[in-house]
Image (tube, rainbow, N blue to C red; front, side, top):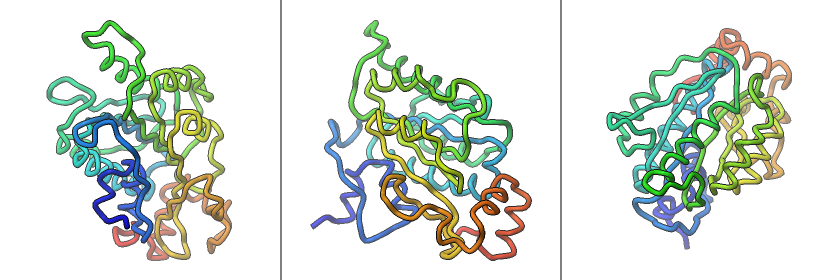
Length: 264
């Protein structure tokens, strides 16, 4: 039988989401090339205006979970925030990928949400960092390597750049980078996110506030489970509208007693 220690050898995305929503079913485990001290993950975090409030708070918890799992696996972590621009965290050693987990945690807690949403720019920026690692000392710009991951977290549709991220998907597949996507909120998930995960062997999840349980619910997007709005107390259209208007949504959360760390 599987035990809690299996989490250490599980996929870091599933393990991170499991920590946020524990259940009797442990995360799936995968064969890793190097179980300790191997691999890299780039966290791409949407900080556009619509992420303000609950979504941003939950995303911060998810990112901290990823750091915790990555530190136990000995993985190097890169972190960037994006809206219509990109802001990379660069370590004290001038590197994007780092094992300075404390510095990463500190950076993640100081987030300001504004601007629009561009998928192309953060993906291209992260993939360039993978290329930089692989080309260092080898002269090679593209080379497949195991245990390379991108965690792409967003609540919106792309409004700038290449909305189909054709070049980035091609490069990720060529390099063997798995793109895991987490789509937050009540809108229909953009098909491009499913394509990014599906064609790079990544995982794909939806996260939303379930007003019945008063908790953030996370489910695989292809799991066949109910859509986010099906069993909620409010009309899905109203929920989605409130989620895009932080002040209105925050007032609803406060009045209903939903918001708070106990419900995340």
